[in-house]
View 1: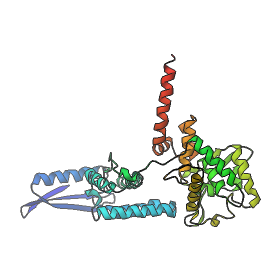
View 2: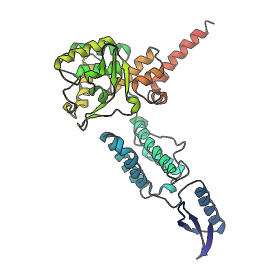
View 3: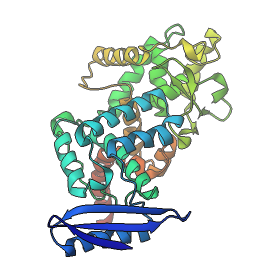
Length: 364
């Protein structure tokens, strides 16, 4: 029910309703120039009540985001991922300030993307917007807002700060593998770690967590069911998500190489205990990888250990391996994730396949 009063030349709308427990609630808003405007506002509020929106709840967006990730995300994520949420929370607080979530329109959100994107890369913007979208969906589920203000928003970013991940060609991969094989000795695990990444496409933290129980020499498989928190040195932790738990086939050459490490008599392939790894290990692995590439004359400006995962995908695509099989091998929850992450690679090989299709059709 709505009532209207005029005070000092301005109209006020007051909406009254009872909740599921019979408790009376009221919400009033003043400052309307005409009674018609006040009625429009009251109608809007009543429609939101009908649609299950809690019109009395109107938290500050930054506060809601913080409460949301602390409640729904923090209990099940790593410290590193939690740090990313904290950074996103600071960005939202700085930009939106005390703006309440119901005040944010699609145009407001798009302006934020336009402004913030000027000085940030595509990767940074993609990660931030994915968190905001999830938060907004939660606000809709909580009945705080009825519309998704992130809907159909355009991610803007600084192209100068955004680079495609580099990957190695087949000939370059062969050169690198040859150089790594020359470095093999059980007391230096770095070349073994890099070779494992090349042949499996696994993440760095997943490779470090491998134990001998995860390696099946009979069926030539490696099972990935955990990872290592090498950044905070807390030992084993779950994989990135449930779909990251997987068993993948590997070639006999890799298994033969890894067998050399058995002389170290350690439970893990690459260390004695999960806590043996140092925080600088990823930096050390990147340095070793870059120095090896430089030694064999391969110049890659931004090539990192994670780029080995991209090289693995590039090789499989070049050999005509189905994207579904690649997605499962990488531990993605669905093919859409694989396609989005490796779109630039897929587009390159699509052109190649288009040429082959054209040639085949010409034979009809």
